[in-house]
Image 1 (cartoon, rainbow, N blue to C red):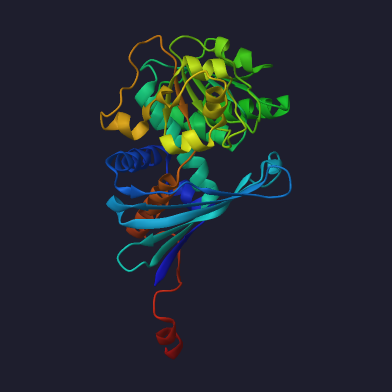
Image 2 (cartoon, rainbow, N blue to C red):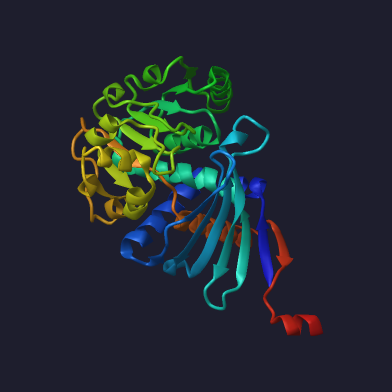
Length: 338
């Protein structure tokens, strides 16, 4: 059985941001239709610091695909030659359970995470939103700038990060790549002042953006925190915004941005307006006024990785790209007999 091996370079070449946003739109629509099986991810906390190993299995009926992402998240790698997320996505077809692709998870995670934020922004932000604040200056900051430009006419970008040198380097690089005026600023408050698009992509454990700093009508994508005890946004911001999720169950089980203010008595589960798939299918409302603040809390769910791996396999098969190896397939006894 020929299995696609897709590395970072190949994934980046074929899985463009526009392609990724379209793929996430299809996957989250399937989620809203109930055509998926997706348990909560299993997170194995390592004894060293905040490093974790995650297992994210899922099934997408509409694609006849089943698979799992195995990913190691090591925040301490930030600023080194290695990405903070390492792993693979395994895609199997559901006819015979054959393995079809082994896809680099670092690139898939970087692109699909930003693509979901891009989809959320397309659904929830004001049509004329063009002033972008990016908090953080790593991989997700880069891909989120791509995603925001894919769905809104971004004209100005301010970035804040610790250390300040990382923000300055991000500003220089992205100005060169995009032709936009990207400015590194000294504080997070300065970055978000007057912004109508805000993306938080940090490894912070405590709030770095506060409610009073956010302008009326802004849309916020909160991406960096992914455990019940960590958050990038304070309780005032979350309580004052219309809150959306990629999946309710993930938000109510894993998101510090939601769980901490809920424990403080600021709101209950009804504060979640809807899932992105529900907005896509008309089951939940989107933005209802120009002045309200909308918030998408991103956690990343397994069907997003599976849909991305499936699409990468599909494109590579159509175009004759990638490395294809014989892995599995035949009954072991038949394979040994030749």
